[in-house]
Image (cartoon, rainbow, N blue to C red):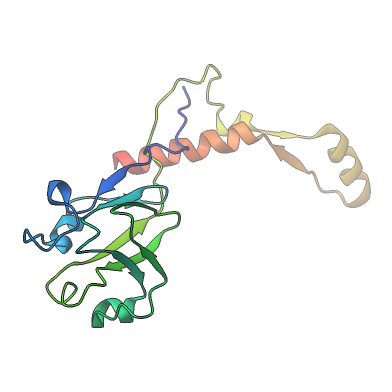
Length: 175
């Protein structure tokens, strides 16, 4: 029995930054600790909830993040309930642009990973062909190649190739 192993297995998630506290300096939130408790994948989004009188969200580059420089933001969010899509894998950096807030710890670094595929086992009605039956000469190309240079061309069906990959991956995961 062959098993399907490829495909998106993780649904996109919305992560509320800072959990129940949100994006704030009123409550001491360790944003680095908050990010370490979750996995962020491409397709997820961040939800920043904050009081617009005291905070904003600025997406910045790494250097500006490290130095708490909010003057060259890539994007600025000011609605108080901002959703930021994490479209591609990579590093994302955010900080509050209000004076002193970044230095007080109101900054966030998120590492977004590629969406991972995990085994989703579903029966395949076709049996796994043995390696000896998986290869078959293509009659048209075999006779043409034999006539031209004595070589025999083989065609390998895609399902046989995928079955071999699935068997290898399942065996590797079980090892």
